[in-house]
Image 1 (spheres, rainbow, N blue to C red):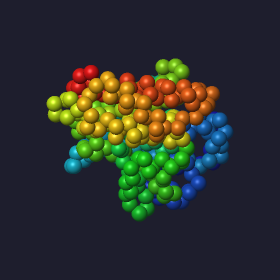
Image 2: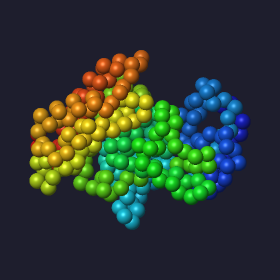
Image 3: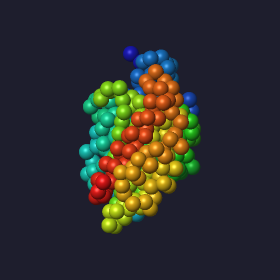
Length: 293
C-alpha cells in the first residue's frame, strides 16, 4: 500500500501543465521506479501525485528537421538502448542507460525521471553532459530549452518551474556528428547498484584520424551534480593521438572534479578511479572513432 493523498492522471502535456497549476504541491510521477519507492519508505507519504505516464506523445526517439536528436522524456531505458537512431548516432547513451538497475527497472524507468531527480549518480547524466544535451520544458508560457549544465542546480534540485514538465532531451547534430564515445560505470557490483563513479568520454578526430579535433569528458558522483572536466578537454584539443596524450588527459580531470568521502568510497579512491576510467574511456573512444593507439 502507498500512502498518497490523491492521484491525478494526465493524457496530454497541456493537461499535465494544467494539473500542475491546480495542484502546485503535487509530485510528478512517470514510471514510478523512484517516487513509489520513496513513498513506500515514508519520504513522500501523503503526497498528491500527477501521473504523466499516459502521455504517449512523450515517448520515442526522432530526428528534427535540423538533425537534432529528440528523446521524449517518457522513453524507457530499454527503448533507448534498442532504438536505431540512438545506436546510429549516440550508441554510448544506450550503453549507459543499459546499466541502470535490472531489466524491470529499465523497462519502466524513463530518461526524464532519471534527469529530473537531480542526482549526480544518474547513469544517463554524465553522458548527456558530455554530449551537450539540452533539456526541453513545457509550461503555461510555452516551451523552454536550457543546457543540461544549467538544468542541474544542486544535489537533488533541478530547474523546473512550478507549472512545467520536462518533455524531451535534445542533442544537436553538431554535438553528435562524427563523434564517438564510451561510458564506464564503477560500482560495487555489476547489477542493481548505484554508481560509485560514472565516466563518459567522447571524441571527434581529424579526417586522417591522427589528431583530436574535440574531446568531452563528464563525470557522475565526482561532485554534488554531474560535471564536465573542461581542463582535460582543452588539453586534448588539436593534439596528436597517443597513449601519452591519454595519460595527460586523464590526469587533467583532477583539476575540475571534487568527489567526496562516503560509505561507498573515499574521495581519494574516487579520484583514482576517475583518472583510470577517463584514460580507458578516452582510448576506447579514439578506437571507436577509427584512431590507432
